[in-house]
Image 1 (cartoon, helix red, strand yellow):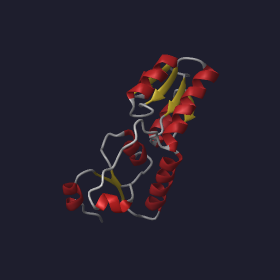
Image 2: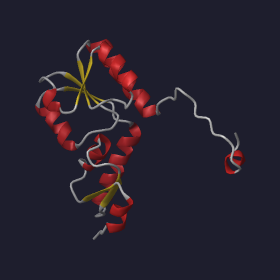
Image 3: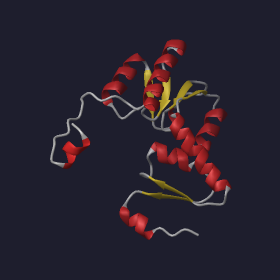
Image 4: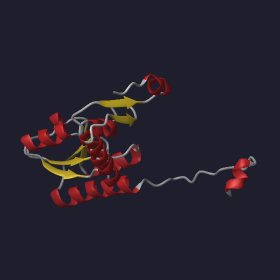
Length: 162
């Protein structure tokens, strides 16, 4: 299908199954390699990908997906998911002597660095996403100053910055 087909009522066909972005592929490979090197269990902070088939396969290999570091035994091998984590999570892992393998997507790391750069320039940071989502919380947790998280058109319309 060409772009002109779409504008004239052409049909779009979505390939199935679809692949993952490079950051997710990388994170999955990191979990698999951690299991090969360290053996089970390997704890993964948050689900590495939003795909139940992949998660079940990794669980079968010995990955344990946890919503919080509180569920990880001290000193355990722990993978930070592709979503990235806050500075507070990094510090908590260090305090608990966790053997951390950071699988944060390089593009997410780039967002973290840019957000900190904006903060250092005295700007307010605006994130578009869902509060509570690991990627949003990881980015928000890299910034010491004011952060606006917007997820609806109404929130955008009501936004006031200094």
